[in-house]
Structures are given as C-alpha cells and as structure tokens.
Length: 280
Ligand code: PXL
Image (tube, rainbow, N blue to C red):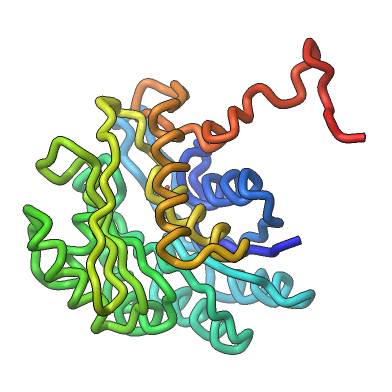
C-alpha cells in the first residue's frame, strides 16, 4: 500500500484543504495521512468571509513525529501552511525523512476569491518549500505573486512566471490557468526546466470549483506515489479534477464544492440496492 501525507489546513465544509486531500487519496487507492497547520472557518453572516486560525508549531511538529514514526512514506503534499514557523517545521520533516516526492501547492490566494489569504506565507514558501518541491502547482494569482510578475494575462506571461518559479528551486512547475485566464478552454502550463507543455481541457460553465486546487495537487501526489511519471501524474490529475468540477455538489448557497468522488462515481458505492459491499 502506498502511503501519502498532506500537510495543510482544514476546510470544515469538506471541499478544500485536508478534507479534499484525504478524499482524493482514497480515490487513488493510497493510504492518507494528515498533519494540520491551520483551521479555516467561513462565516455565512458576512457573506462567507474566511478566517484562518493558525495552529501552533509544536502541534504540527507532534503530528509529523506521529506520521513519520512508521514505514517510509511514498509522497507528500503541502497546502495552506498558516505561518512561517509551520513552513520551516514542514521543511525540516521533508529533509529529515528524505522525502523526494514532494508536491508544494503554494496556497496564497483562495480559489473563487481575489482575497489573499496567506500573505505571510509568500516568503517562506519561496525560501523553504519551493527548493524541496518535485513539483509546485500555483494558480494564476499565486504564480503572479511568486514570480513577482503580477497579473498574468496569457500563456506567454505564464511561461515567464514558470521560468522564474523554477529558478526558485521547484523541479517542475504547473500553473493553473483555470477560470481566471481569459480563454475559452481550461489551460494549464507545465514546465520542467527545459520544455513547456500546454495542457488543454474543457472549461466548464460552472461555479463548482471550491476545492479544485487542493484536489489537483492531491491527485498529483497520489499519482506520483503510485509510480506515474511527473507529466503523466499532472495529466491524470487534470482529468480527475475536471470530473470533480463537472459533477460539483451543492453544499451551501455560498460556494460550489467539487465532488472528489466523481471520477469513479463513488456515490454509487455501497448502495443497498446493488448489494452494498463488493469485496469477498
Ligand atoms: O483553496 C484554497 C484553500 C486551501 N486550504 C484550505 C482552504 C482553502 C480555501 O478555502 O480552506 C484549508
């Protein structure tokens, strides 16, 4: 059994954060571990404003000791980190445990809002996490911030940003154009330090994208653990997220959640009418 860790924040509504990661890991058939850095709560009385409660570094440290006490893990991803101390603690765990399959989702700007959630994390991500990353998965806004290029308007801007982010130490970069890019298709840009690949997908006319970024990075992490090469892992993750967006679920009136089980139609599992459990 492949073993995969997420070091990230909690999204109590189940769309993003560790909830997205663990659900995605399960869909990929890998064993999921988690170490929480922060807890995000959303307030319906203010139109769904986000509040991030950071967890103390000692608590992250203790979780990581628990996680790494056993067999070697195959891959890990980082998501929302809360603060620079947590970033440094995560980096130490990555180095001490000689983790090579590291996916850094540089959570700075939350999907669906222009609201920058984690400005304090920017320098720490650049200094401590990107040099450890086998691949990093910024969205358009995050890529603009990390590369210091600001607004990225087209694929050429994304290429320049990818080069700069690569120079910060990540061995591969995939920038998610998503709904923010002014394009008729869902364009992502992949860069391995030598060549660019533009991944083209269908752009769904839907608001159901809460959790898409976390799910994408989690899917890459699980696919790497399973043995897919980096580019193939990204392609598979893109298909997995496309299904999750296309079959989003209505959870509340504020944001549309992706459905992490869409790729395998997980909602049909264990139905009493079809016999429930299928194992013997
Ligand atoms: O999608 C960014 C994100 C990451 N992690 C957590 C979140 C969010 C957005 O809400 O809550 C925990």
